Amino acid sequence: MESAHGSMLLVYALIAIALLILMITRFKVYPFLVLIIVSLLLGLVAGMPMQTIVKSFETGNGNTLGHIAIVVGLGTMLGKMMAESGGAERIATTLINWFGEKHIHWAMMVVAIIVGLPVFFEVGFVLLIPIAFNVAKRTNKSLLLVGLPMVAGLSVVHGLIPPHPAALLAVQAYHADIGKTIAYGLIVGIPCAIVAGPLFALLVSRHIQLPKENALAAQFLGSDANGGNGVKANAPKRELPGFGITLATILLPVVLMLVGSWADLFFAPNTLPNDLLRFFGNTDVALLTAVLVSFWTFGASRGFTREQIQKFCGECLAPIAGITLIVGAGGGFGRVLMDSGISKEIVNVATAVHLSPLLFGWLVAALIRLATGSATVAMTTACGIVAPIAAAGAVQVKPELLVLATGSGSLIFSHVNDGGFWLIKEYFGMTVGQTFKTWSLLETIISLMGLGLTFALAAVL
Image (tube, rainbow, N blue to C red; front, side, top):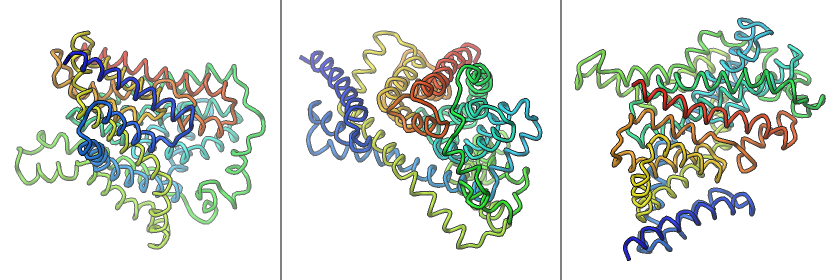
């Protein structure tokens, strides 16, 4: 009876995931609601005591949000300050001058990797797209050649490199070392960004013609008076911040986290200097420090008043509320899978099949990504499923590599259920077919290459 119960649990889990896909894609129900409904139903059919189902969901939701909500909020504030001060524009213009018009696609990838570190993919995209429009117009190049390297850079950072919220969550779930994860993430991520970004863009921009007129681009290229993201509007009056200070502010949280995770190299454990480095290297504290610094570097020193800075902080949080709720609900779903015993069954199956934990992490994340459309939900939910398996597995893998494998899986083939898909389609002025041939293919290249490079890294380490 027990084994039947076990295999039935797996059937229920598959049905639940199928139901998730169906309700989000076919019936267009908001993912946050779907995740709650499916989690509760799954708890009921799996035979969890009724009084514990909601509690289980709330616990998973709370555990996930406890950390991610702070990171998302602070990261978005940092991004907003950068946008309003003209910092993003400064980074772009400087790199374009360095790389030259001929290598503009390389410059855009580098810009995206830097700017994408503290912010969600969608936020980074909206920050950088005005720059892409301006660059494409100034250099007379296809928007694909300029824009695809940019989204590749953003995507790689999103899936693989802390302090990005999704990657950070995986670091927590797998008990990985954040410093090593950043280092390995760069080793794997940069080649992926190069192939899926500039190289792929050079190839595909020859074959796909975008329409001459782009209504959205016109907003950002029109008269400077009505600039698209507030940057252009202020450009004539306000001087842009310096390149050095902009870069320093954006990279400050990354540096603090790295130094914090290497505290033992500098000072003996349990001494005050070591504790201080670890404290400031904590994700929340590192991002908070950067936001406070940005109030001066991007705010006061650029002539913004305290009221304006307050307003920026308030304004930027509304668009991310939806993402944050969905991510929390993904965590709740993961917790119900655990508490209902489904995760344990999946562990048993994975152990019996002798699947490498890296491949399993990638596969689970890839399936959830295809189902829900969100890389972040894929990563959060997959971590909940894979972490117990990795802990119990006979094959021991480095937790940092598990973060990268799961992250790579979460980026596979973006399609119609992903907000990013429509964002890119609309801004680039493409048809659905063209979006599949460019953006969806680009994501798949990153995902497969990321997995391959993670395995290569595992063989070396």
